[in-house]
Image (cartoon, rainbow, N blue to C red; front, side):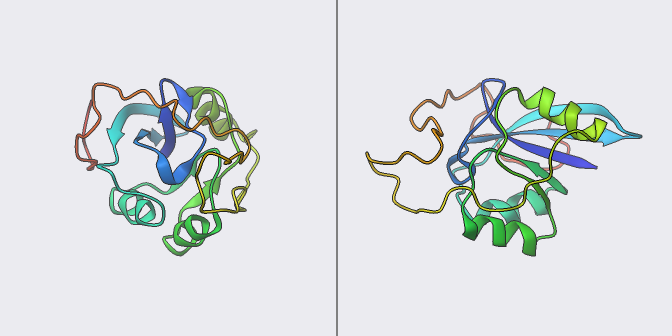
Length: 143
């Protein structure tokens, strides 16, 4: 199993389509065996579904997400756990323990991300780019 979490400084980033990084966890026998932070290379919204699936991800944990991205992730066969906040590592542990609620519905119903944007307090403009930003996302990358 390969799990991706929208990622910003240890936390679940709150806007799927604007995430600049994923933390990707490889899981075997119900335990995390490795984790890596990978850049998205500027890919956004629906194109991220193909990026994730193409890199062997089968499960996504995120915060806010729009309907177009939900449709693309569903079409790509990914399991979606949307509407989450807090520590990325803790969310993965909850998923593995069976206590993370499955949510696969859009919770961000707009495409205007201007000054009036208040979609659940995503925290736009608060991203902090880590040392691995811009590194191509590919299987086996260890950052």
